[in-house]
Image (cartoon, rainbow, N blue to C red; front, top):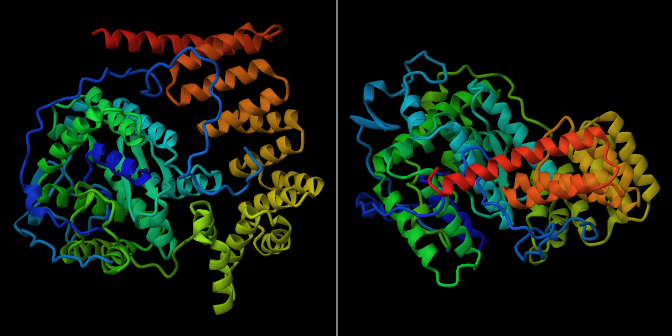
Amino acid sequence: MRRTLAATLGCLLMLSSSWSFAVDGSAAAAQSAPDSSASSTSPASSTAAPAAGAAGSSSASPSPPPRNPYEPYPLYPDLPAPATPAAPPPVDQTQVTLGTSKLPAGDVPQTQSTDNSLFGTLPDLGSPADATISRGEESEVGQMVIKEARDEHLLLDDPEVKEYLQGLGMRLASEAHDPDQQFHYECMNDGEINSFATFGGYIFIFTGLILDTESEGELAAVMAHETGHVVQRHIARDILEQSHMSIASIAGMLAAVAIAAAGRDTNGEAAEGAIAMTQALAFQKSINFTRGEEIEADYVGIHLLASAGFDPYEMAAVFERLQQDEGLQEAEIPAILQDHPVSPERIAAARERAAQFPRLDHYSESQSYPFIKERIRVLSSTPDDHLAEYYARLRTERPLTPAERYGQALVQMQNGQAAYAVPTLRELRDENPELVLLYSALGQALAGAGQMHASLAEFARAEQLFPRNVPLTVHYAETLLKAGRPAQAHQVLLDLFNLVEPTPPQIQLTALAADAAGDTADAYYYMGEYNLANGDLGLANQELELALRVPHLSTVQRERYRALLQQVRGWIREQQQARHGG
């Protein structure tokens, strides 16, 4: 079901050039264009609300949802036949589609060009796209996507993984020099070798793809390609092609498919209609148009890759390796998401573009990559994967790498054997004193082994070395809660999130810490923030009203709660006006 929802979400994005290397066996079918004149009748979303979710009910604060069987196996339980690639279709060298403009082959970037600028000869389609959908509207739909993905437990919502991907992504995106565009990099907990970009600069990298990469440069190449789609606003340009589709129609399709895929649509009519429309839209995109977007994203991505200090040849290399990967599976992936295979022409074009940049003697890759890769292997696994046996088998064949030793220690912590993980993690921390994730893991292992005093001391020392590091502070707060020190947990979280924007799970943790510390008003306030971040305006309104009713508020608290409540009520009014035609 997780893959089904992930796939249907991808359909709704209308970016059929996502990073899937499954073979498209239905190229001929893609040339046909089924009628897509139908449109969704879902209510329009607010253009001012921070998320496009509908206003919530007036019920009390929601209790944590029951554990989803497809969630990653918890790291800390006591805390809350291969396909044969088809021959690629011939490329018409006289005409290559870029975006919505067809340029003669002479205008496509060539090796003899000395233009290493980001946009080079790419078409400027920003203005038409802006006229069709604004960045604010793109952001609303992107927030809907992320909310649905989180609600359906599709994300690997781990602070270390999130920080790493966001940091790596921004290293690339900063080279685009586009201050008006936001970029959000998320980890999709799915074993497919896949990724996609969607509205609002949201880029989803699948766990299967991360585990398949062999270097940080390969991972960066994938992320640079997807970032290229965002930089060139391919989503907005696709909407320009399908200009009869409104934001409300897209949002309505997304909600219908998500609800049906989650098993909540009793008659299936909503899903049937949404999927039919999505298929029609996707089939309208010709094979040349898809190839054009991919070439353009490659072109921009290679520039970002080289400018960020990575080997620009990594993109062609990862194309070539994944094309030859015999482990790719087509099962469970709808035909609509099976992209065109990587052609030799595309690989050659990527190499030609990379040749425009000087080769460096050394390329900068972080020490975190192999450790994050093993962390993802562990967190995305289930008990059926038997990772303890996996690491034991590796150890009989050769000595484990430091990252693999870290992964084995995480498995021991999962299995209630934290005491065995402590010496390994302590040794790894001493050998790699710059890796913050080793301090966090050691602190958690000590707590899991019953050495709470030593655990808190380890966290306190690490906080001095790496002040306001998000994953470290979050795990420190979790351990303080476990140790019965909620007031201190609340304080360290406030100190962090007054400067750093928290994710919804981190806002919820702050609310739990405030509640455990007896700060009822702040508990209501942060639950209001949590519901607001999830687009539940009704619940946010209720929580903020409850916060204002708590006696003995300070002047600062009262003014802060009122200011946010006024904003929320304004967004609710705008939603109501939009639903009633203005």
